[in-house]
Length: 92
Image 1 (cartoon, rainbow, N blue to C red):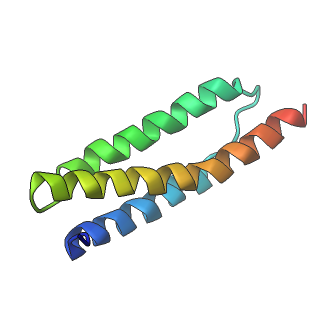
Image 2 (image 1 turned 135 degrees about the vertical axis):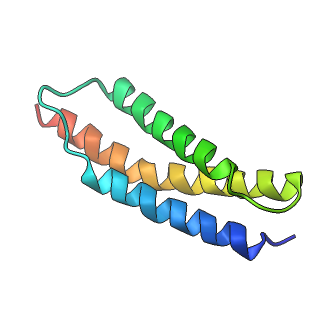
């Protein structure tokens, strides 16, 4: 079953906003450990999931599927950011 268009639009908006958040990050000096950055990124993903949870439409199953897709997309967006952070740490 395909997602409702309203939920697809919310996923798209969430991805765009999350990408802006990632692109605005300036790596700290002194750097924080990689595990701490991973925790921060997980917290950001959870924040976005909780924010968009209230806006999803449709039956409960539809909402859960949309939230799962949003989470997968946000995790996919965060992976290159974490690779970039790892490279930053390795430069020290």
